Image (tube, rainbow, N blue to C red; front, top):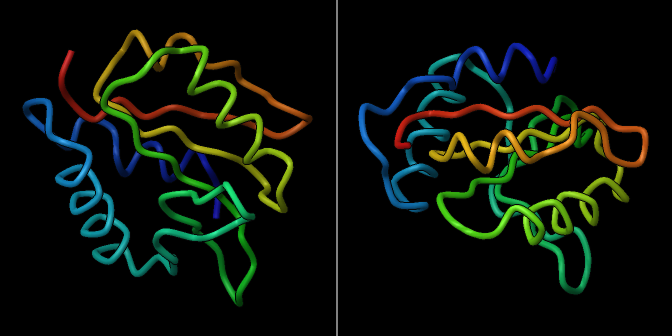
Length: 120
């Protein structure tokens, strides 16, 4: 699964800023509507659990992390940890343009994309 394709499916899907739980429901719905295989709440390691992993035939493919608040530094640290796992790319789905703008386009040699779905 291509991370840019996922971004395009998710961008602008919420008219207002949802909670993280509502954002999770939205992502599940969009992935299911497009028949995209995914796993939710994937445990990666003792302290790491990513919100979604999109991939085919058991491959991790794209890791999706949802954030509606938090500091940019904390989110970058979290994404950096996830980049250590067998993902091809990472996608931050957020309601905050500020958070999206702070995320680098690459971590540990892996593509990192952002999709702002609503909010501010």
